[in-house]
Length: 108
Length: 122
Image (cartoon, rainbow over all chains, first blue to last red; front, side):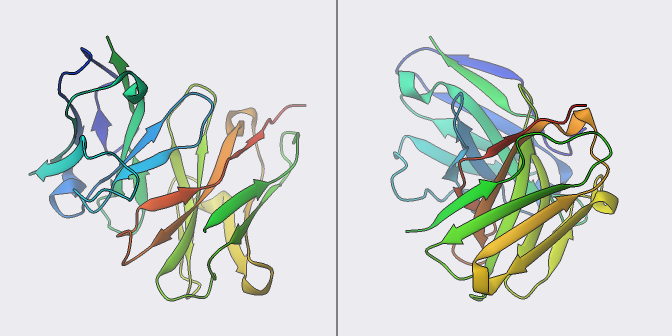
């Protein structure tokens, strides 16, 4: 079992906004990072340090956090955003890391 | 340009020891703040963090697998090695290594290797 909880699946209409959430007690203290993974590919970092975007990641991806919940928001979803999304943060001890169970995003 | 590449056996038998090597380029394993982690993903399942080693040889392990894992680095060879003892078919997964930096990525894994699939079967 994961200390970070994600909804297994979320869908969004093309061009609309979608929020993917990650819940866990450790998120009250530690920031989350978010990874996009398409079938057969390695994960790609899309958000780190709670809300920072690596170079090359479109600005339609944004991150936020409140209390025990971190969120990844995609504003104006595109077909190529269809993928699995994972959050990651430190565990409650602060000495190890843990991934969420992942959210499969479908763009309709 | 930072790159990482995993290598390992094409098949491992149950109870054997699995040895995986991550060869890195574009950065030094001795640079302050650098970390290299190992993550695995069983077919059709979620990512699982396994271990991480820092530039100063600080090592962290998943509590669930700590008794079976050892992570080391060889700075001169630009390699990070992960060994897992007493493997079982449930350890069948794609194993990834990834780069992080305490300051520039706030511990996030910003660059990943392509992964190596390791089946465990008799």
